[in-house]
Image 1 (cartoon, one colour):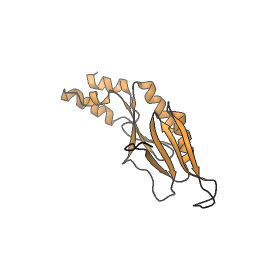
Image 2: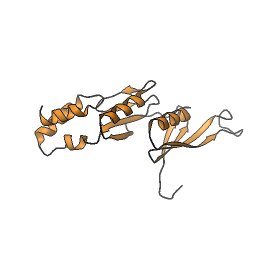
Image 3: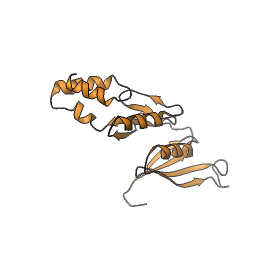
Length: 160
């Protein structure tokens, strides 16, 4: 561990290893690291997973099986910046696998309850265009979308 570095800790209720396996299957440059299991000292049944270290696209995470006391909500989400529609479709579909829930404006919750934003790289320039009419059209289109449609955002932006 590097001093000053950080790792995102995700609190699960017994699903840390399943979540890590799923995320590693979705993201490139990803891997499972160490897995810590309960010993005869406890807490919990011996051999069950306490933590699992994993890396997604170079970002370090630890999944902690902390129990049901805390759950995920939309106050924290992970943004996935996508170069094109194929990437948006890929991440959207993979993260919804197994019972995820789509949300508005590119947001979704995966089957573990973690919130993700699957967004096109060009979104900020479309909704932040210096021309207020173009920006407003793009914003209205964005607000009407569930999964982002880059072509639709571009058409709205240009007024087509």
